[in-house]
Image (cartoon, rainbow, N blue to C red; front, side, top):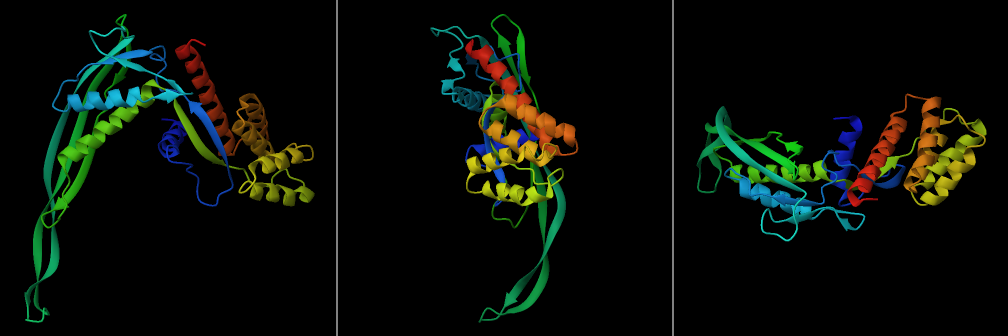
Length: 312
């Protein structure tokens, strides 16, 4: 997985409830649609999901159905989930599969605790002893084998990543891990991953501005600092201030990157790409810049996916 893909996964998980930037950081919010991981299934509009095999197969098929049915991109439902047979609409593809789970409990190092074994009438401990409690580790393995097959018979997607959950508990613990709860966590994770595999995702994140003074004239350094601080209360004003610094500081990676970030915020991907590229030419060491270009490439890929899916 690329650095950007990892960042995108974390951002996508956080963006549902709000921005994910560090507190008090100088940042600019950016919203965009990022691509499905799988391009082969982008043309699928109607999808049927069979009842998967295995002990937890029904639960998994329900979870995947709900996840795909709820995908909305640009106010348009991405999938129409239809019956496998007997419906009025023939599916573009059918998802079928099975899932097996395994649970293993392994004895691990005992827990030794010093406890009071004798008290007086006032509750004062008279005698302490070491008490030994056995401990075990519960490991649950989740093995899915799921395929998305086009009506033409073409294999569009394979989802078979094995997951595990482990938890250690001891004899004296009041709360012990549950095999069922751990399995349901992995079912939810699989459904979310299937959604990301097959459909784009709208991500709202915050990106930290670049603050280095390299390439900034001495007389403009205070203005750059002020523009950066302004992002906390007036992003539009900060963006105007960054733009005003360009003429006198055409080789400043901070000025160029921050102007590009402002353009990305406004959805002007071409302008953002131009400024990020210029910043990269000035200083290729700044990860902010390469990450910005990666974001733009991903968003362009998403645009292509939307055009294919919606017939644009």
